[in-house]
Image (cartoon, rainbow, N blue to C red; front, top):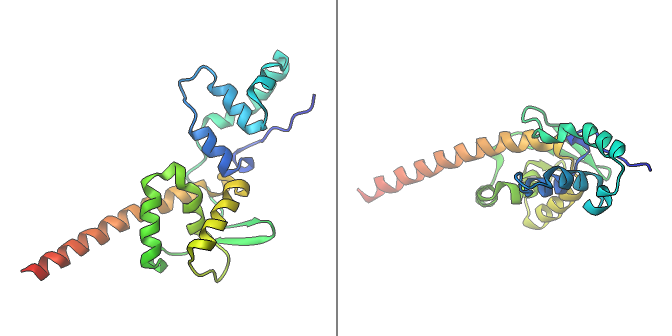
Length: 179
């Protein structure tokens, strides 16, 4: 029996990571389900592996019990021959992009592929919800979580702080106009 086992989060798609994130950590089959997702095999098939092979796979996947690094991310990623570059500044977001980002951040885990699609873009890409959705679907299936996760955490924290500051500013401006 030959099984391909990922070596790190850099070989795990965003879709697989989302599946893992949705698992019940208290389930007795938690580890089995992680292995099933990472190997793209039915859990019942994995149950049939001999104990030596199963233990070898589990040892090889020990890294999957730790969340991807928040410190590491690539500035550029390549998928299907297209280079996607991380945006340099949230200050370049349009009003529509801010509103969309705010909505995506309400359910971070469900929408992470949309957030990645807002953060990583081809050179010269202008914001469009159509291309954003297309890029999000591409990232979901072909983007590697280990290469991008840190950017998600970084930009999400920055965006949340920026949105609160913007909201405070708008409230103060509105209250001044009422006087």
